[in-house]
Length: 89
Image (cartoon, rainbow, N blue to C red; front, top):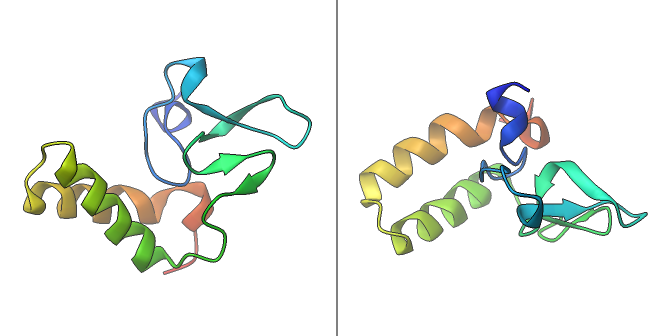
């Protein structure tokens, strides 16, 4: 499995444990998205812009202990390259 397949393709959260995975419409575990982004086959933040998703992730990462500068660099380098955001610059 590639490193890219081990992270949520919406927010970049690691998906190493089954309990972190979202669910598809049929109830099965999503192979691409985390439970904070995706539930029952739908994005929980449907309609959010790439810019707003990046800002949301920066806020979450700073609450988890990263500096604002580190969180900003990480979000801006990871999120735009994920499947959900591909081509939505």
